Amino acid sequence: MRTTGMGRSLAALVALAAVSGCTAQAVDAHGNTQGSTQGGTHGSTRGKTPPSASKTDRSATPGDDKPSGASPSAAPKVLWSRGDKGNDVREVQARLHQVAWLIPAPTGTYDTPTVDAVKGFQGKRGLPRTGELDAVTWQRLRGMTHKPAAWELYPYGGQPAARPDPRCMTGRVLCVSKTSRTLRWMIDGRTVSEMDVRFGSQYTPTREGVFSVYFKSRYHVSTIYHTSMPYAMFFSGGQAVHYSPDFAARGYYGASHGCVNVRDEGKIAALFAQVRDGDKVVVYW
Image 1 (cartoon, rainbow, N blue to C red):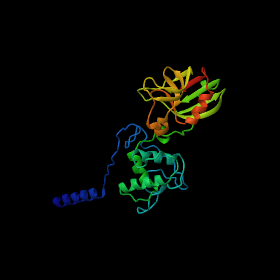
Image 2 (cartoon, rainbow, N blue to C red):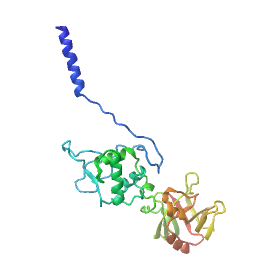
Image 3 (cartoon, rainbow, N blue to C red):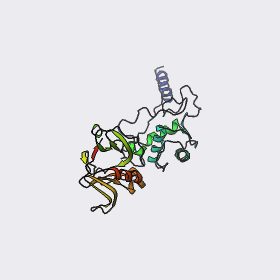
Image 4 (tube, rainbow, N blue to C red):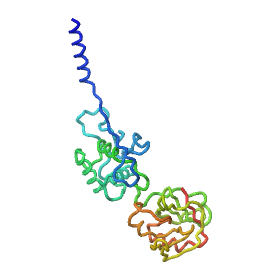
């Protein structure tokens, strides 16, 4: 009888093990720097509420592979698809760019290149090649990428200008925001024009503070790097605001040697004609 009881106990343990399960989820945490083609989730971005869906009846948190109450065979909810627009789509495009499926810069519009990129991403991972960004595809994409920085969302400019620094509100000022990477030309608190700018790298940083334009040179050539610096307006040592054809071509995938680069030649030509020696320059975060 004792042997039979032990056998029954052993059978019960085997049955319990058969119905109990444990799954492991791999976490991709490479800690790549910005601009890399693949990377883990940085800091506390993993697990945060992702961008809100842009279509009606898309209230489920992106990453959920099924709506609440759906049958196991139900197709995952579509979050974004062709024709959608907004910051959420811009983030999707930036993440697709990180893993080299989307080459063009983010536009904020779910267009044909985005559809093709999503199809390629889905096919590589054995998912249905719909071209629509559904919850399962979004979950896989988020797991392989990091939350895009502002420069990744607007790699060629176009980011809304930041609020002017209080020091920009009086007089004639070149008001330069490192946060939004924009320059406002302001006169007595009024914005006359705005333009995209970029700065030096971590090894050649653009100085911050309040300066004055002390020298202008329309056809300037750098004596250190022997490169053209059209429409140069010097404000701190060798650092100047000037047009950069490299910025126009490469966007924020490059950097200056400390100057404030402008990408729109027409805008800086007009600015150069208006700025005078002695005008204030404010560079701030």
